[in-house]
Length: 212
Image (tube, rainbow, N blue to C red):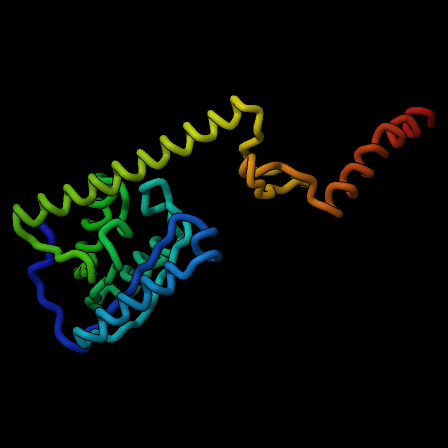
């Protein structure tokens, strides 16, 4: 696939930043989105780019970038500003798409908007050798994603076999960390008692309706 990475952006050109974490827990418990944006802004400043917009996602999309709201918004922004050429900055190659097929599909979409893709952690090179290396890195990201998914399934299966609940907690319950058993499902008060009281009253209400 031929890309337009041979184009050299001018100093002062507009840049768009895209940051992504795998889930909302990473967003709330850590500062990865902030650190990604900081590195990308620093990279843009060093090259004299003017950052126009920042797009952030906190979902993985399973490798499919079109399942990420901010990525769809970024592509829509490029489509709306078709007369403007942008540099799109990703903190790392894995932030594009951790799937080889979707990686190149996204690169093709960005290329269609004449967007130049850059990253502080990866040098894009529009040569046969450069595209080969990029493909290998994209394939490595896909391998890691699939291995992580397999490990999650294996861990969940093992806990199920030991009698633990591993799915999303039902209403009235939540997970609580236990030193010996890991995450345990426990009652979430006062919601649990309210739901229990409502359920206990349902048979009596049904009998009352039948007696009328």
